[in-house]
Amino acid sequence: MKTSHSPAAFTLIELLVVIAIIAILAGMLLPTLGKAKARAERLKCTSQMKQIGVAFNLFLVDNNDQNPPAVYRTGDYQYQWTWDDMLHKYIGGTSTKADLMLGITDGKGCPKILQCPADRNKITITYAQFGQRRTYAMNGANITGPGSLPTPLRGVGVYIANNNGSMPPDEPVGYKNSIVESPSDTLLLCEQPNGRNIAGNDWPSFCAGPTEGPGNPGGFNGDCFQISKSQYGYGKAAYGLHGERFNYLFHDGHVAIHKITETIGRGTTNNPQGMWTITAGD
Image 1 (cartoon, helix red, strand yellow):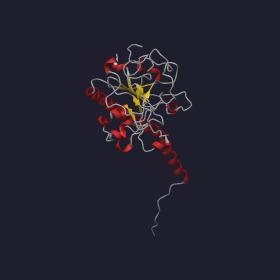
Image 2 (cartoon, one colour):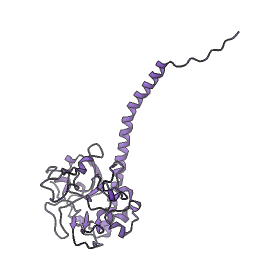
Image 3 (tube, one colour):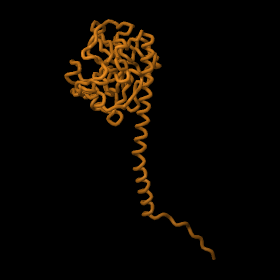
Image 4 (tube, rainbow, N blue to C red):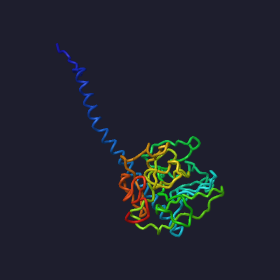
């Protein structure tokens, strides 16, 4: 008489060994996958900044080599004119001019390239939840108006405060691109990934440097720096989307990733020179 034998089942110890091996392999793979994802996000961010650089060049061609301002602020919330508003049509935006001047661009018509995929910060302004995150800020000059260069010479993205509450002009009110002495070493855009950085909003459409200090323009509330020392600390909370480094778009159109300390030249983080100014060799 033949007897049938059922296949031997796995013992509990064998199952635990298999599970342990799978857990070890997963633990070895997850950091690699995380690094690959971070690299992909950084590369996409680089690509987006290059597209914005092309938009700046198109704007220069159409406007007699004149840059847009970082922001034209009138004191009336419904009338604001930021650099991304002026580049809106060049980067695929579909919002109307009236919408763009409201101070916050509706996310429905706003180009997605204004937000780096690594920037996962939430909008912290409760009344602006419909807006679109804007990761980038223009390298800003001291608070000034058109017609005179700031001292010291900083970026061409000038903050213009015209507090008469009237509609800003259609024409650009920034500086000529020709004042930049070394385009390949001068920042045009930097990452400014704080929770108040919203497309179309005046704060922080420009960045005055790594940290708030005596060499930077006074009177800011701390939004306008990559790492803020102010009570708000928005920049510091999100320091370094890419391993304590930021992507930077330069005036010649190339994008590079740097530690903050690599951008300040002969200056300091509180009083940056180097890539933050339009002067060569500092």
